[in-house]
Length: 380
Image 1 (cartoon, rainbow, N blue to C red):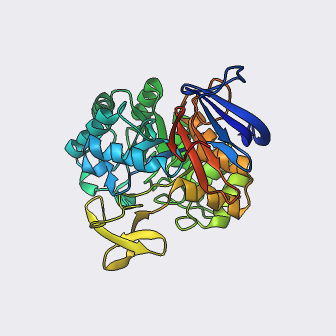
Image 2 (cartoon, one colour; image 1 turned 90 degrees about the vertical axis):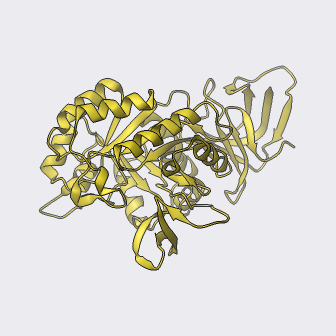
Image 3 (spheres, rainbow, N blue to C red; image 1 turned 90 degrees about the horizontal axis):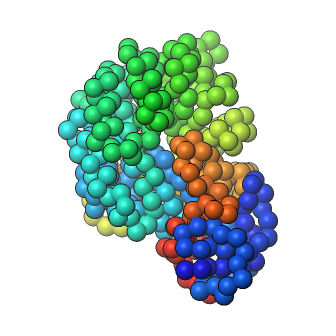
Protein backbone atom coordinates (compact mmCIF):
# COMPACT_ATOMS: atom_id res chain seq x y z
CA UNK A 1 0.00 0.00 0.00
CA UNK A 2 1.20 3.51 -0.86
CA UNK A 3 0.39 6.09 1.83
CA UNK A 4 0.88 9.85 1.77
CA UNK A 5 0.97 11.91 4.97
CA UNK A 6 0.54 15.32 3.42
CA UNK A 7 1.82 18.66 4.72
CA UNK A 8 3.04 17.46 8.11
CA UNK A 9 5.66 18.88 10.47
CA UNK A 10 8.18 16.04 10.81
CA UNK A 11 11.20 15.49 13.06
CA UNK A 12 14.14 14.95 10.74
CA UNK A 13 17.80 14.96 11.83
CA UNK A 14 17.19 16.92 15.02
CA UNK A 15 14.90 19.57 13.57
CA UNK A 16 11.28 19.97 12.54
CA UNK A 17 10.51 20.47 8.85
CA UNK A 18 7.29 20.79 6.91
CA UNK A 19 7.13 17.96 4.41
CA UNK A 20 5.12 15.18 2.78
CA UNK A 21 5.86 11.72 4.18
CA UNK A 22 5.48 8.81 1.75
CA UNK A 23 5.12 5.22 2.95
CA UNK A 24 5.56 2.40 0.47
CA UNK A 25 4.64 -0.88 2.12
CA UNK A 26 6.54 -0.94 5.40
CA UNK A 27 9.15 1.66 4.49
CA UNK A 28 9.49 5.44 4.39
CA UNK A 29 9.91 6.22 0.72
CA UNK A 30 10.88 9.03 -1.62
CA UNK A 31 8.18 11.26 -3.12
CA UNK A 32 6.15 9.26 -5.60
CA UNK A 33 4.28 10.18 -8.79
CA UNK A 34 1.71 7.42 -8.30
CA UNK A 35 -1.68 8.13 -6.79
CA UNK A 36 -1.51 7.06 -3.14
CA UNK A 37 -3.90 4.41 -1.85
CA UNK A 38 -4.34 6.36 1.37
CA UNK A 39 -3.92 10.05 2.22
CA UNK A 40 -3.55 11.48 5.72
CA UNK A 41 -3.97 15.23 6.07
CA UNK A 42 -1.03 16.21 8.24
CA UNK A 43 -2.03 19.85 8.64
CA UNK A 44 -1.49 20.84 12.26
CA UNK A 45 0.16 17.51 13.11
CA UNK A 46 3.72 16.61 14.05
CA UNK A 47 5.32 13.33 12.98
CA UNK A 48 7.88 11.69 15.29
CA UNK A 49 9.52 8.27 15.02
CA UNK A 50 7.65 5.64 17.01
CA UNK A 51 8.64 5.28 20.65
CA UNK A 52 11.04 2.45 21.54
CA UNK A 53 10.83 1.13 25.11
CA UNK A 54 13.86 -1.01 25.91
CA UNK A 55 12.93 -1.78 29.51
CA UNK A 56 9.33 -2.82 30.22
CA UNK A 57 8.03 -5.76 32.27
CA UNK A 58 4.33 -5.54 31.56
CA UNK A 59 1.40 -3.53 30.24
CA UNK A 60 -2.37 -3.79 29.92
CA UNK A 61 -2.70 -6.47 32.60
CA UNK A 62 -0.14 -8.82 31.04
CA UNK A 63 3.58 -9.21 31.62
CA UNK A 64 6.66 -11.26 31.02
CA UNK A 65 6.06 -13.02 34.35
CA UNK A 66 2.95 -14.65 32.83
CA UNK A 67 5.29 -16.83 30.78
CA UNK A 68 3.02 -17.07 27.74
CA UNK A 69 3.25 -15.83 24.17
CA UNK A 70 -0.33 -14.58 24.47
CA UNK A 71 0.69 -12.22 27.28
CA UNK A 72 3.50 -10.76 25.18
CA UNK A 73 1.18 -10.35 22.20
CA UNK A 74 -1.35 -8.53 24.39
CA UNK A 75 1.43 -6.18 25.48
CA UNK A 76 2.26 -5.61 21.81
CA UNK A 77 -1.33 -4.66 20.97
CA UNK A 78 -1.83 -2.44 24.01
CA UNK A 79 1.47 -0.61 23.58
CA UNK A 80 0.64 0.41 20.01
CA UNK A 81 -2.11 2.72 21.23
CA UNK A 82 0.51 4.55 23.32
CA UNK A 83 2.75 5.19 20.33
CA UNK A 84 5.22 2.40 21.09
CA UNK A 85 6.36 0.78 17.85
CA UNK A 86 9.09 -1.48 19.29
CA UNK A 87 9.78 -2.83 22.78
CA UNK A 88 12.07 -5.10 24.75
CA UNK A 89 10.01 -7.41 27.00
CA UNK A 90 12.10 -7.42 30.17
CA UNK A 91 12.57 -10.55 32.27
CA UNK A 92 12.93 -10.36 36.03
CA UNK A 93 15.66 -12.16 37.92
CA UNK A 94 14.00 -15.37 39.10
CA UNK A 95 14.68 -19.08 39.25
CA UNK A 96 16.44 -20.21 36.09
CA UNK A 97 13.47 -22.39 35.15
CA UNK A 98 11.16 -19.38 35.35
CA UNK A 99 13.51 -17.06 33.45
CA UNK A 100 14.03 -19.53 30.61
CA UNK A 101 10.30 -20.18 30.37
CA UNK A 102 9.62 -16.44 30.10
CA UNK A 103 12.26 -16.22 27.37
CA UNK A 104 10.67 -19.04 25.42
CA UNK A 105 7.31 -17.24 25.55
CA UNK A 106 8.84 -14.11 24.01
CA UNK A 107 10.55 -16.15 21.29
CA UNK A 108 7.24 -17.83 20.52
CA UNK A 109 5.52 -14.44 20.24
CA UNK A 110 8.16 -12.93 17.94
CA UNK A 111 6.83 -12.61 14.41
CA UNK A 112 3.21 -12.84 15.51
CA UNK A 113 2.88 -9.26 16.76
CA UNK A 114 0.03 -7.12 15.44
CA UNK A 115 1.09 -4.07 17.44
CA UNK A 116 4.49 -2.95 18.71
CA UNK A 117 7.34 -5.09 17.38
CA UNK A 118 9.49 -7.16 19.72
CA UNK A 119 12.85 -5.49 19.17
CA UNK A 120 14.74 -7.74 21.56
CA UNK A 121 14.77 -9.17 25.08
CA UNK A 122 16.19 -7.39 28.12
CA UNK A 123 17.23 -9.84 30.83
CA UNK A 124 17.39 -7.95 34.13
CA UNK A 125 19.90 -10.19 35.87
CA UNK A 126 20.60 -12.75 37.16
CA UNK A 127 24.19 -11.54 37.82
CA UNK A 128 23.18 -8.76 40.22
CA UNK A 129 24.23 -7.65 43.70
CA UNK A 130 22.61 -9.30 46.73
CA UNK A 131 22.48 -5.83 48.31
CA UNK A 132 20.49 -4.24 45.46
CA UNK A 133 17.87 -6.87 44.64
CA UNK A 134 14.95 -4.42 44.49
CA UNK A 135 11.81 -6.15 43.15
CA UNK A 136 13.80 -9.10 41.77
CA UNK A 137 13.56 -12.58 43.29
CA UNK A 138 16.63 -13.09 45.52
CA UNK A 139 16.38 -16.86 44.96
CA UNK A 140 17.28 -16.31 41.31
CA UNK A 141 20.35 -14.14 41.87
CA UNK A 142 23.62 -15.74 40.78
CA UNK A 143 27.28 -14.92 40.58
CA UNK A 144 28.49 -14.72 36.98
CA UNK A 145 28.58 -18.04 35.15
CA UNK A 146 29.41 -18.52 31.48
CA UNK A 147 27.26 -21.64 31.45
CA UNK A 148 24.24 -19.67 32.68
CA UNK A 149 24.96 -16.81 30.28
CA UNK A 150 25.08 -19.12 27.26
CA UNK A 151 21.98 -21.00 28.44
CA UNK A 152 20.07 -17.69 28.55
CA UNK A 153 21.32 -16.71 25.11
CA UNK A 154 20.51 -20.13 23.68
CA UNK A 155 16.88 -19.96 24.82
CA UNK A 156 16.64 -16.41 23.49
CA UNK A 157 17.31 -17.55 19.91
CA UNK A 158 19.20 -14.36 19.07
CA UNK A 159 16.66 -12.01 20.68
CA UNK A 160 18.64 -11.19 23.84
CA UNK A 161 19.90 -7.65 23.23
CA UNK A 162 20.39 -6.39 26.80
CA UNK A 163 21.44 -7.83 30.14
CA UNK A 164 21.63 -6.03 33.48
CA UNK A 165 24.58 -7.00 35.67
CA UNK A 166 26.63 -5.85 38.65
CA UNK A 167 30.23 -5.04 37.62
CA UNK A 168 31.67 -5.75 41.08
CA UNK A 169 30.84 -9.46 40.98
CA UNK A 170 33.69 -11.97 40.54
CA UNK A 171 33.91 -13.39 37.04
CA UNK A 172 32.00 -10.55 35.36
CA UNK A 173 34.92 -10.00 32.98
CA UNK A 174 34.24 -13.37 31.30
CA UNK A 175 30.61 -12.37 30.85
CA UNK A 176 31.63 -9.02 29.36
CA UNK A 177 33.93 -10.67 26.82
CA UNK A 178 31.26 -13.19 25.86
CA UNK A 179 28.59 -10.47 25.59
CA UNK A 180 30.75 -8.41 23.25
CA UNK A 181 31.26 -11.46 21.04
CA UNK A 182 27.52 -12.20 21.00
CA UNK A 183 26.41 -8.58 20.45
CA UNK A 184 24.66 -8.26 23.82
CA UNK A 185 24.68 -4.83 25.51
CA UNK A 186 25.55 -5.11 29.22
CA UNK A 187 24.09 -2.53 31.61
CA UNK A 188 25.30 -1.74 35.12
CA UNK A 189 22.31 -2.13 37.39
CA UNK A 190 21.12 -3.63 40.67
CA UNK A 191 24.69 -3.00 41.73
CA UNK A 192 26.53 -1.84 44.84
CA UNK A 193 29.79 -1.25 42.95
CA UNK A 194 32.22 1.39 44.10
CA UNK A 195 33.31 4.01 41.61
CA UNK A 196 36.55 2.08 40.94
CA UNK A 197 34.63 -1.16 40.41
CA UNK A 198 32.22 0.61 38.07
CA UNK A 199 35.12 2.02 36.07
CA UNK A 200 36.68 -1.43 35.81
CA UNK A 201 33.34 -2.54 34.43
CA UNK A 202 33.43 0.27 31.88
CA UNK A 203 36.90 -0.87 30.87
CA UNK A 204 35.51 -4.37 30.36
CA UNK A 205 32.84 -2.99 28.03
CA UNK A 206 29.88 -2.51 30.39
CA UNK A 207 28.94 0.90 29.04
CA UNK A 208 25.24 1.32 29.71
CA UNK A 209 23.25 1.67 32.95
CA UNK A 210 19.90 0.27 34.06
CA UNK A 211 17.41 2.87 35.40
CA UNK A 212 20.07 5.39 36.45
CA UNK A 213 20.01 6.31 40.17
CA UNK A 214 17.63 3.45 41.05
CA UNK A 215 19.06 0.25 42.60
CA UNK A 216 22.69 1.34 42.34
CA UNK A 217 25.38 3.04 44.44
CA UNK A 218 24.74 6.77 44.44
CA UNK A 219 26.83 9.88 43.91
CA UNK A 220 28.65 11.29 46.93
CA UNK A 221 31.51 13.77 46.86
CA UNK A 222 34.04 11.25 48.20
CA UNK A 223 32.36 8.13 46.84
CA UNK A 224 31.10 8.77 43.29
CA UNK A 225 29.63 5.28 42.89
CA UNK A 226 28.02 3.91 39.74
CA UNK A 227 26.05 7.12 39.27
CA UNK A 228 29.25 9.16 39.25
CA UNK A 229 30.90 6.81 36.77
CA UNK A 230 27.90 7.09 34.45
CA UNK A 231 27.61 10.85 34.63
CA UNK A 232 31.30 11.70 34.33
CA UNK A 233 32.32 9.46 31.42
CA UNK A 234 31.14 10.04 27.87
CA UNK A 235 31.54 6.42 26.84
CA UNK A 236 28.74 5.42 29.23
CA UNK A 237 25.10 5.56 28.09
CA UNK A 238 22.27 5.80 30.61
CA UNK A 239 18.62 4.81 30.73
CA UNK A 240 16.25 6.72 33.03
CA UNK A 241 12.64 6.13 34.03
CA UNK A 242 10.94 9.27 32.71
CA UNK A 243 8.11 9.64 35.22
CA UNK A 244 9.57 12.30 37.50
CA UNK A 245 8.84 9.95 40.42
CA UNK A 246 11.73 7.47 40.35
CA UNK A 247 14.07 10.37 39.57
CA UNK A 248 13.23 14.05 40.13
CA UNK A 249 12.38 15.81 36.88
CA UNK A 250 15.13 18.39 37.34
CA UNK A 251 17.69 15.62 37.75
CA UNK A 252 16.40 13.98 34.56
CA UNK A 253 16.78 17.27 32.71
CA UNK A 254 20.25 17.80 34.20
CA UNK A 255 21.36 14.35 33.02
CA UNK A 256 20.04 14.90 29.50
CA UNK A 257 21.67 18.34 29.27
CA UNK A 258 24.95 17.01 30.71
CA UNK A 259 25.23 13.70 28.85
CA UNK A 260 23.49 14.84 25.66
CA UNK A 261 20.46 13.33 23.97
CA UNK A 262 22.69 10.83 22.15
CA UNK A 263 23.67 9.18 25.46
CA UNK A 264 20.29 8.98 27.22
CA UNK A 265 17.48 6.47 26.63
CA UNK A 266 14.17 7.11 28.36
CA UNK A 267 12.37 3.97 29.52
CA UNK A 268 9.17 3.17 31.41
CA UNK A 269 10.19 0.06 33.44
CA UNK A 270 6.42 -0.32 33.48
CA UNK A 271 4.73 -3.16 35.33
CA UNK A 272 1.92 -5.56 34.42
CA UNK A 273 -1.05 -3.55 35.80
CA UNK A 274 -0.21 -0.36 33.87
CA UNK A 275 -3.28 0.55 31.78
CA UNK A 276 -5.07 -2.56 33.08
CA UNK A 277 -8.81 -1.93 32.92
CA UNK A 278 -10.25 -4.65 35.15
CA UNK A 279 -9.34 -7.49 37.48
CA UNK A 280 -6.87 -7.92 40.32
CA UNK A 281 -3.73 -5.78 39.99
CA UNK A 282 -0.53 -7.77 40.40
CA UNK A 283 3.12 -7.26 39.49
CA UNK A 284 5.45 -10.26 39.54
CA UNK A 285 3.01 -12.08 41.81
CA UNK A 286 2.55 -9.24 44.30
CA UNK A 287 -0.84 -7.52 44.65
CA UNK A 288 -0.38 -3.78 44.12
CA UNK A 289 -2.26 -0.50 44.20
CA UNK A 290 -1.57 2.99 42.89
CA UNK A 291 0.32 5.34 45.19
CA UNK A 292 1.45 8.79 43.99
CA UNK A 293 1.85 7.64 40.39
CA UNK A 294 3.74 4.46 41.31
CA UNK A 295 2.70 0.87 41.89
CA UNK A 296 3.06 0.09 45.59
CA UNK A 297 2.37 -3.07 47.57
CA UNK A 298 -1.31 -3.25 48.45
CA UNK A 299 -1.77 -2.30 52.09
CA UNK A 300 1.86 -1.14 52.37
CA UNK A 301 2.20 2.11 50.37
CA UNK A 302 5.78 2.66 51.53
CA UNK A 303 6.93 -0.43 49.62
CA UNK A 304 7.30 0.65 45.98
CA UNK A 305 6.99 -2.10 43.36
CA UNK A 306 7.58 -0.01 40.23
CA UNK A 307 6.45 2.23 37.42
CA UNK A 308 3.06 2.95 35.87
CA UNK A 309 4.59 5.12 33.14
CA UNK A 310 3.81 5.01 29.41
CA UNK A 311 6.22 6.17 26.71
CA UNK A 312 3.67 8.70 25.47
CA UNK A 313 3.42 10.16 28.98
CA UNK A 314 7.23 10.22 29.23
CA UNK A 315 7.45 12.10 25.92
CA UNK A 316 4.91 14.67 27.09
CA UNK A 317 6.72 14.97 30.42
CA UNK A 318 10.01 15.75 28.70
CA UNK A 319 8.51 18.44 26.49
CA UNK A 320 6.67 19.90 29.48
CA UNK A 321 9.93 19.99 31.43
CA UNK A 322 11.71 21.94 28.70
CA UNK A 323 13.00 19.66 25.95
CA UNK A 324 12.18 20.45 22.34
CA UNK A 325 10.15 17.90 20.41
CA UNK A 326 13.25 16.75 18.44
CA UNK A 327 15.20 16.35 21.71
CA UNK A 328 12.39 14.36 23.31
CA UNK A 329 12.14 12.26 20.17
CA UNK A 330 15.86 11.49 20.31
CA UNK A 331 15.79 10.04 23.84
CA UNK A 332 12.54 8.10 23.32
CA UNK A 333 13.41 6.60 19.93
CA UNK A 334 16.59 7.54 18.08
CA UNK A 335 19.08 6.92 20.88
CA UNK A 336 17.62 3.57 22.04
CA UNK A 337 17.71 2.38 18.43
CA UNK A 338 21.37 3.39 18.11
CA UNK A 339 22.48 1.86 21.41
CA UNK A 340 21.00 -1.52 20.54
CA UNK A 341 21.77 -1.50 16.83
CA UNK A 342 18.13 -1.58 15.72
CA UNK A 343 18.76 -1.04 12.03
CA UNK A 344 16.27 1.09 10.15
CA UNK A 345 14.47 2.23 13.30
CA UNK A 346 14.36 5.41 15.35
CA UNK A 347 14.39 8.02 12.55
CA UNK A 348 12.07 9.38 9.90
CA UNK A 349 14.38 8.80 6.95
CA UNK A 350 13.98 7.36 3.49
CA UNK A 351 14.58 3.62 3.62
CA UNK A 352 13.78 3.35 7.33
CA UNK A 353 10.92 1.27 8.67
CA UNK A 354 7.71 3.30 8.68
CA UNK A 355 7.22 3.50 12.45
CA UNK A 356 5.55 6.88 12.83
CA UNK A 357 3.48 8.64 15.48
CA UNK A 358 1.36 11.64 14.48
CA UNK A 359 0.77 14.08 17.32
CA UNK A 360 -1.74 16.92 17.50
CA UNK A 361 -1.03 20.41 18.82
CA UNK A 362 -1.42 19.25 22.44
CA UNK A 363 0.87 16.23 21.82
CA UNK A 364 -2.04 13.83 21.87
CA UNK A 365 -1.75 10.77 19.62
CA UNK A 366 -3.70 11.07 16.37
CA UNK A 367 -2.26 8.15 14.36
CA UNK A 368 0.29 5.36 14.88
CA UNK A 369 1.95 3.51 11.99
CA UNK A 370 3.95 0.36 12.68
CA UNK A 371 5.81 -1.00 9.69
CA UNK A 372 3.55 1.12 7.48
CA UNK A 373 0.35 -0.33 8.93
CA UNK A 374 -2.00 2.05 10.73
CA UNK A 375 -2.51 0.64 14.24
CA UNK A 376 -4.23 3.65 15.74
CA UNK A 377 -6.32 6.42 14.17
CA UNK A 378 -8.05 6.72 10.80
CA UNK A 379 -7.28 8.06 7.35
CA UNK A 380 -8.90 11.32 6.29
